[in-house]
Length: 180
Image (cartoon, rainbow, N blue to C red):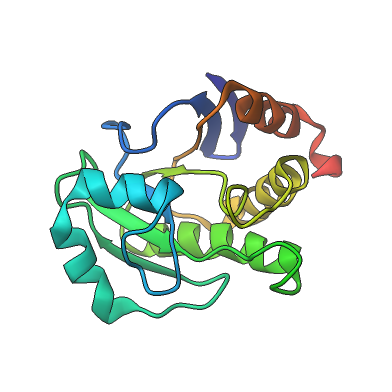
């Protein structure tokens, strides 16, 4: 685990499975617009949470790129799931603005719901095609920019599926703040 403190918030990276983070109040789903079972992160979260998650989510959708909504965690070890629709790289414009909005909106939604710890995947870097290096920069800058306005969130964890993705996020996390 790599960690860095930004004010009262600890930002950390781990390699692992986002559905197995029992010490977090909420995890973030890299959702599809309809908030239904899908592939990748969305599929893993829905499978772990059980069919009740999709039933709760259907009336919350559709959402647009950059938006976030919250649901219960159902059979997950987390009380909440925050669902974000990331941009499709090369299609949804502006990609960086929409990706940053996912993280900003998720953190603000978590804060309003008294969530103190939240876990994120690398939104849009799978089938949506966002290059991991660019995504890590956009993501970390968005988090650092929103941290001063948070009252409740104290832990932000990036749960990366592969060791190579974790290494990219580690480099971005440890970069000088001026570079974020």
